[in-house]
Image 1 (tube, helix red, strand yellow):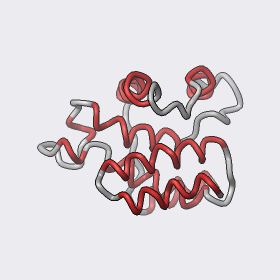
Image 2: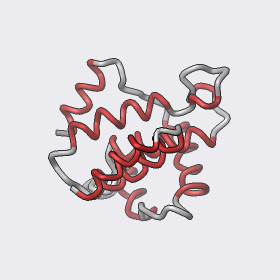
Image 3: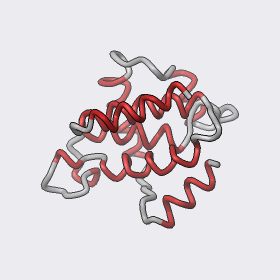
Image 4: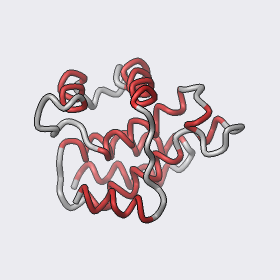
Length: 142
C-alpha cells in the first residue's frame, strides 16, 4: 500500500523530496512545538526508525509528510512554501502528499497511520477547514 501511495503521489506530481538537513530542521520544530502539547509520537521510537536502526514501523513517508505539513508553518524557510511570498502556504505540498498517502494506506491500519491522521487533522483544521479536519480525525477510529 505504501508503495502504491508513493507511486500515485509521484504520478500526480505531488511527491515532495527535501534535503536531510531540512528534514532535521522540521523534526526539531516538531519536537519543540507540536509534540509537547499533542503527544502522539514517542520520540525515541520514531527516531530509531527514522535513522533505520529498527524495522521502521515507527516512521513512514505518510507520518513524515504529516509532520512536515504542520511544522513547515513554524519555519522561516521559504522553500517550504507553495508561494515564497506567502507564509500561510508553508507545508501545503506536504499536506497534499500526506492526503494521497493516507488514502492509499487507509486499508492497512498501522500506528503511523493513526499518528499521521491525527497530525494531518490538526494541520487541516489550522487552515480553517474544520469539517474536513474532523473527517481525517474520524479515520483514527477506523
